[in-house]
Image 1 (tube, rainbow, N blue to C red):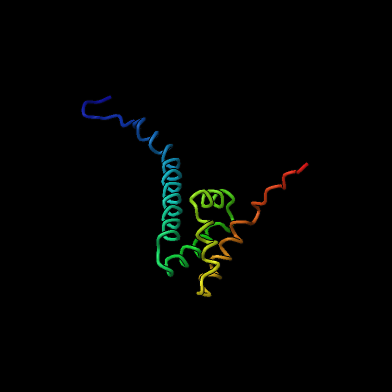
Image 2: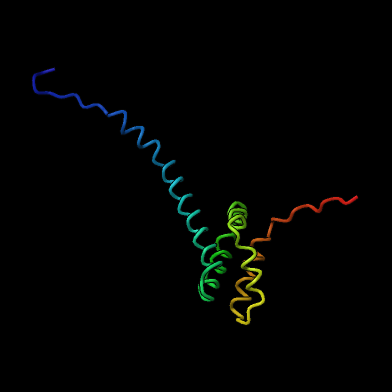
Length: 116
């Protein structure tokens, strides 16, 4: 090698960062998803009527295709406030809560316990 020439080698740290990038993206996405679910639960519990309707509509959209999301949202305590909304005098509140509850219930049926 002549004087002044440099050998450029890839740095191992850069390769490792590239390999872990998808994992970081997945973790960030999951964190945002969990924060969104928590925010929806808060809106449903503590928000005004319009916020509750919006939250119910968002629940309906989020749980359409994901059993995991259904379970996680149910764990955040959204079912009871949705049930309370069913007795609202506001049609949109009743409609949104009913559809959200129906979507939460889809494919979450538990087998009946044998009584005996």
